[in-house]
Length: 80
Image (cartoon, rainbow, N blue to C red):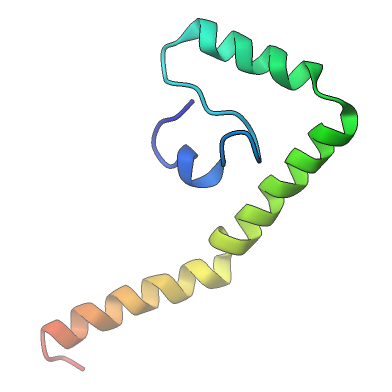
C-alpha cells in the first residue's frame, strides 16, 4: 500500500503496484493484475525493483547521506 516509505521504494507500474491503504478492491485489482502478467514482465518488474533499491537505498549510499546530514548540522553549530 502507498504508506510510509513504500512509495519511495516501489515505482508504481514499474517495480510493483501501489494502492491506497484501506482500499481492499484496489488491492485485489493490483494483485490480479500482477498474477495476470506474463512471467517475463513479472521478472522485469522484479529486476526494476532490485535496481531501484540498489541505486537509492544501498547501505553505502544511506551512510553517506547520514554523514552529509551530520556534517551540515555540525557546520550550522560551528562545530566543524
